[in-house]
Length: 440
Ligand SMILES: *Cc1c(COP(=O)(O)O)cnc(C)c1O
Image (cartoon, rainbow, N blue to C red; front, side, top):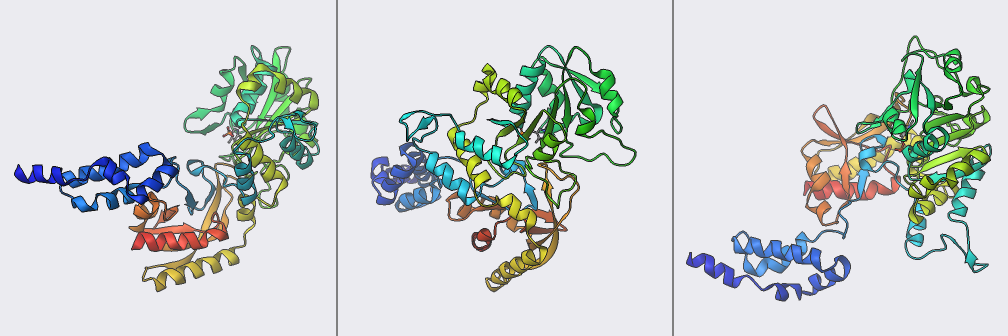
């Protein structure tokens, strides 16, 4: 009892701890509340006797969060290039730069030369138009789901949307496209079967009550074997708009992904409207792209719901820089050669071995992920490590206080594999440092 009272008396007062220069500086960076929480936690440790009273300031400094938001930078070494749990596409340096430049006040809806109101996001829309010449006009909303909701609301509320039974997809996390569409008041008119749907099935279903025909790319699954599905060109001429959801956001065809549709091809084939995600194979920020016939796109963009789905300046900045700037990290990851990845894995592994870590370079297989290219195998290389390092690489002390990036890999045969195809070469050094910190 006496010892307890003594310990309490010895614990330094809050204002005394906060006056520590390191904690005073942290208050500038993180705000008072977060620093105070770290101090309280350290005082509690001293009270319970788990640290010495004299160590309270040091313990508080160690417990400080890296930044005021809890989102932590992660090096995606899973081998899944587009990982929804890890924020999908990483932005290019150019896009990050643009986001930072737009973060303060910016000329979002202002013409600096004229000193008058300007068109919101003009640069991004012009970049989209340049990237997809077949599109008469473009609009950007919050994500592809929002693009579909807007199209269904404007073109088919209270009416029918004709869609193949083989394309009734679940996007992920329990969200299903048919439910999303029906939430707008449009009705789904299913045609065909899971494996086979013909142009005649669509034609038989189209009538005066049809809002549009919806063609959805199976972006996260494959139907193989005895299958049939008409292309876009076979669905035009039914007298109703053809809307195509390509999912991935590929704007032009990619040689490694022959089954992945791109916006330009579907528009040239006759689609009236194409919707896509910004943060999948396009490699940009979360966004929903609407590309197509000018009259349709303008109708969508002028609907009141468009205001509720519009994107902010950070998204607009990142999207334009992704389109106009150097190739996005996802494009570089797709195009990386296995020999190059192997050399990187060997180099990292050698550095880890000289730090006393059980590491070796191994061949590996990567995947595009839910963002597209289902079934596509991308030959890769990985750094193989003891499985026990995984939790510390994800959330060890160095990660918590911002000295190292979190690294997420995948398990295979009792080893932790850090697959390099989804890791930018510039991250090899931080990745090596993170492993050394986790092993220390
Ligand atoms: C990913 C995907 C969606 C959902 O896109 P979000 O941008 O995540 O809203 C819709 N349709 C298809 C075909 C997709 O692949």
